[in-house]
Image 1 (cartoon, one colour):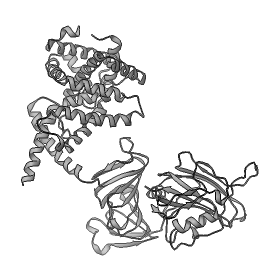
Image 2 (cartoon, chains in turn purple, blue):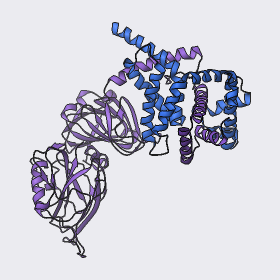
Image 3 (cartoon, chains in turn orange, blue):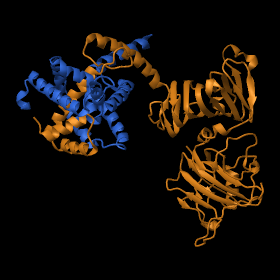
Image 4 (spheres, one colour):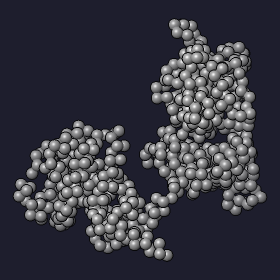
Amino acid sequence: MKDQELQNQIDCFLNETISDTGAKALEERLIDDVEARTHYLNEVGLHASLNRTFSVQKGTVVLPFERSFDPKVIYSLAACLVLFLGFCTYWFFSPPVARITHVVGAYNGNGIAYEEGESINQGGISLSRGLLRLDFSNGARVTLEGPADLEIHDVSRIMLNAGILTANIPESAIGFTVDTEAAHVVDLGTSFGVSVGFEGLTEVCVFDGEVEVSPVGEYGSGNLTQLVREGEAISATINSSIIDSVSFETSQFENAWPVNYGVLQTTGSMRFVSPGPDFHPGNYKDNDHIVVFPEKRGFIAEESIRVDMIDPGEYQKSHYDEKPTLVPRRAMTSYLLQMDAYPEGKNPNRRRGAVGQITFARPIVGVVTEDRLLKESEIVFGIPGVEYPSARTIEPRPEGDKREGFDKLILTADRHSLILELRENPGHLDQVRVLVEAQ
Amino acid sequence: MHKEKIDSSKHEDFVSLYIRHEPAVFSFVMSMVGRSADAEDVVQRASMTMWRCFDRYKPGTNFRNWAFQVAKNEALNFLTRAKRDRHVFSEKLIELLAQDTFENSDKLEARRRALDLCVKKLPPEDNDIVSGCYAEGATVRSYAKIKGGSANKFYKKLNRIRGKLQQCIERQLGLEDFAA
């Protein structure tokens, strides 16, 4: 018989009540003592065999593996295993339908966290809370906001039973279809949001491009198909052939939408607005928010880009010649953060302020704030055809100055977040371009 | 048609080998990862890898050792993730456990066979406790709650029953002297 201390440690290990300290002590003993290891393996062997002998769940076919020495059981399980392996063959040799690329506090119905990089094939996704971005193998990007229930039928067809999703569909995935109990939504190369609420009430909001929406079931004839264009929204109910036009209201998609663009979270007054028609920095004024505009995505610049800031910390002004430079041929995604205050209310010239934080899925590689560099980088990363407003200034507090009213910009140590505190006189404009490592 | 025949025969070969050696693989994985739910998960992943790479297995060679190797790699992957939350065994110990399991797998196999007989000889009360605590989805805590008693009491009973079963195995195998 082995000594009592070892036996106690092994018993606790098998009963799954062992502490970290106990596990470390057992580990040290097992490394040093070959006899202790033999005894340990015998004990684990017994425990594992008991587990296999008594944990057969009757009537299930999910077990691909043997749990008994009864030949009849082995035979039936073997038959199940053959079926299971047939499935595996298909599963292993087919590329995954989609992959989870971003996770923001996302848990399934059993309280288990989703992980980035997980492959997703046909089947259901139950999201009790949080946000989950799925990148499909055909290029479609779908962000799901919990609580939600989604079924993936194949690479170009999903069914939203409940919850909210936003989708970006590139040309390679045109025809991507989102079904709900009330509507078929067929993409025609676009970005849109779908929500399914109480009793299957479906709302579709088109941010860009156009989609076809038709009612389901007996009402689903081609005649009732509606084309919904950028800046339009519809609602549909179960057992009704009527698709109502409703006002273009994007607020319900404002959590999921940024994730489609690699922005995991915005807090405070930072706002990633779901775009509508002609949404660009030149025509969007807001006294209360720092608004985020996505620009070029995964773009590889041929020239080096001069920026104001690359290292974590607080932004301080510097001379042009001292500005750091990002090397060319590096894939980056660009975002423009803007506060454009305008005179309004009883005290129109009152100075406006906004504080907020934005967190990206990928690390920030450069931040541009000064007008000259904003113009230079705009040529490379700006949205073609958009007229960018100018005269943009971020005024950080000079060293030693104790006065109020300066702007603050901090790049966090993990390089994923930017904290902004802006003060703005109406009629003036603050802008920051953030360059993020592309996926 | 010909390909289907080959695939079907490949399935049968794999099923036959896997079923024979799965208990040994499960036991080996359990010795590395500790918790039965984690061990199930690792074995499941390992079995899929084995099937995916079955073409690389050379018929006639030792399937059990090949399966152990695949299982060890899966366990190491799992432990790398799990060590963020709790203390897990180091790679050094995993290597030692793997070496011992490889070398002693016949003896461990004999112990498993002997255990079958010993379980049949368990007194009804002990059999109830073992089957209750090891049932699918059950824990000692959940069993203690049903039976009305502290979990600690049932942990002790279970430890004692496992001790008795070890002694029975030793007797079956004529190894009593070594156990003394």
